[in-house]
Length: 220
Image 1: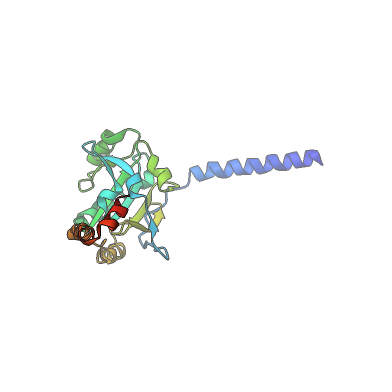
Image 2: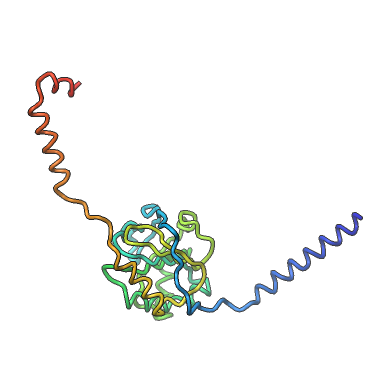
């Protein structure tokens, strides 16, 4: 019985290894031409300030710098074939929609840093996407990224509304229409500059009319 169990395990291990080898030779996933985001039932918070990276000039930035815009955050790398496959469609999407209301944020996790991404852009005619690099790959843990490419749709409030794993065809009409719907939604409520000043004036006014005993109690 012991020998039979050992042989069974060996056979299982053999077929498991064979499956892994076969998977390595499978064709890359094709771009999903009929793709559309499936939004969450409720938006999820994103630790915007904790997702840090450098731009093409080496300036440190974070996702909070884009709050007020709809953001398509794409986690990618030059060594990732599916990422490379979808990059031209992201470039076109930024050309079509990029501006005050929307931005594609292609966040590279290449260890080679800015130079590696800049060379890739030049070699592949990526001329409308900015360069953002997180060579530390800390963003993977911060955002719970399971693989590349992962793309996250973030609304104007800075909340994650959907995400997808794998290459997509980002310049298709259905995707553009879906993103435009989020672009049409209101952004974060603007703070009123005079609110704090009025509050301060009110405090002073109350203090001025208070009795000496009340003011003394306040100071204590």
